[in-house]
Image 1 (spheres, rainbow, N blue to C red):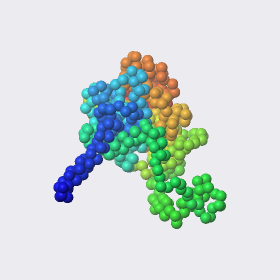
Image 2: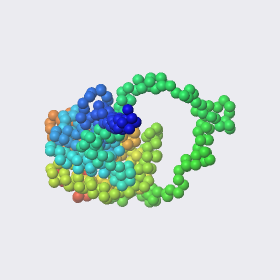
Image 3: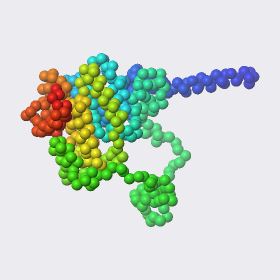
Length: 438
């Protein structure tokens, strides 16, 4: 056989192998199916934790029971903490939590556009906070369009490399022990390695144990790009209390008693301390309020009014030290006005103010996030705002503890109104709404 006759066969074999190699990721994703777009093979993989956290919108979109859902929750990780199972325990089985970790207003709005066609939608609960209205928040991230594109086209989904990466993570998690054993059996040309110790260190010093070694690694001559830029302009926002002789609440008139200075002497440790000092600065140092993002919220409110869907805004609680940081950076008055503007759109359930619940860090997992016990109570209070089902209400009243929203005069500790907006304060909960609103 001549070499010329072998050439077509070689090309054919290359083409076949190329096709198989290209098809491999597709088959791999078809079998693993990390987001369960169309489960075929059950490998008993625990997909929810890894898959959802890797791409919240994709997981949520694929699992959305559109035909049966009546209550939808939108928002970021704090709204996501209002888990579906807590609603279901109260008897509200037609509730779906469409909130994402790290969600932006862009994602909230696009998700709203997606769920607008839900045939039986009755209530929309939106977790919201001032911080989200900075146009640079999370760098304007929006994962929803990609989620819709992947979930709407199985061919693109199964051939997507991101999906393949999550499939591999799931297998690695499932078979971690076996993989570890195999990796130890794998031959290596390098039997051992050791790190060189600086000549300036004692002969018996350990590279891993002696901090001086780490400091030497940060020497300018060793690491020329390790320093932060020195030409960053200072924050344009000064501390209001330092600039003025009065607290911001003093110029709010009748509303001033809602915002008394926060006096708290507890010592924060761990992530609580780090978030209050560092994360809060990142949140507020260059914060700007975007009217464009606000217009998205107005559009949502207008749609709910025109389509007979009940809308409730929820401002989730943070620890009081984190609340104080908003004031420290000069945004106390804006924080108040934000609530006033929200109340003109729909009732606001506000849990983020100085009260016994937010002063106790035991109610939180970190400075931003409340624990599951607080989540269950918040869900109960929201439920009282959106349903009158007697069996559900009975379960809610059994759940009530340190959070009680003022649904009646005997539960109201403070009432303030300017003729347009009224605020009722109960226990660790305030209701902001238009005057005489039902």
